[in-house]
Length: 242
Image (cartoon, rainbow, N blue to C red; front, side, top):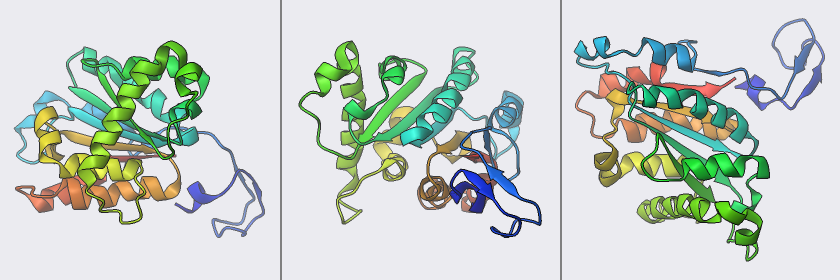
């Protein structure tokens, strides 16, 4: 956590209490790992139908990916790597929740891909959480991708409406949307996701990725028929960027 919080640059020996050698922090992403220090794709490769014989561990069929701002690149790379697993029927769905100030702030180079993921019936279901009012020029800026991205934004508004103002201050970010998705029985019933067949992936600032473990315990495990097994599974099923 301390490393993820450091800004890029050179740190002198002993400055951050991580040893006696100088440390360089680069703004790069090498992958996603869980608390057992296993990487995402390696873990999913081991998640096979053969493991479904266990009463507590099932094959991962749903992956919820949350990202904000510049975390889009790393998260989108993870989503793209997971897509073939859906095509091979080894997974059912990738749920991608992306937070951005407004649709107009989505980087131009990503709009086409996100618009494709915003469609219905594909391997990926994109939900966009916006924190600012829509720009009157957004449709013009987004061009042919405006309609699809607006659909993804509407999914975000739908989750916001299910929140019931629980945040109190009116803020609603990706971590809140993820919590609502698991709090809503209707959402889970629609997609068939549960703690037994789900993994969470975060690519964002420290407070967002750290919240994934709390969300797993408070929301994913809510009403679980085996709360102990659900809590333990968090060590395998919650992945953060490194």
